[in-house]
Length: 209
Image 1 (cartoon, helix red, strand yellow):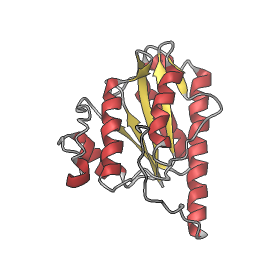
Image 2 (image 1 turned 90 degrees about the horizontal axis):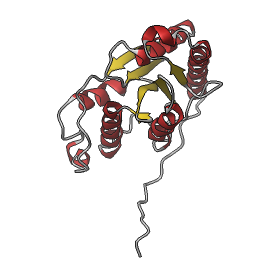
Image 3 (image 1 turned 90 degrees about the vertical axis):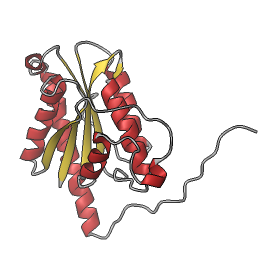
């Protein structure tokens, strides 16, 4: 079992990375492999062209398509973002909009029924709004959301300050152990013949009459 930790910060080894690293260490203690994936700066916004349904990939040829292929082999996901203007970073927003949409529209919903968790790093505020935003990617894809004992946030303006947020770092460890427990429960269920529920054909409606 392995978990993909997605770093949605412009800083490869900044505060968000430091938080994800704490999760990775705890997952390892629980016997779960993990990897931190840095999205970089290659993330154009979605064009809403729906070409992914025909091409089976996003029409924009950048790291998003690479990510969908790579992420398919993981059993759980943790999405990390800094707070920018009381929201997730523009980078991770563009990236996830396209990754989740293209994966679903291409018929490769690699995320369905796999557990997901969101974490936010901030100097001061905007964390809960960021977490609400990121969690929506999970709920629209039938993904169980993994929580800690508090909202999944750490505070600090630099990586060394993140370590001083003792409660925040403790919560990340609790989150990681909860993720490990959920994955082990899913594996036990699978071995017992308990499979994910069947999907229905999606019905799309609007409210225009």
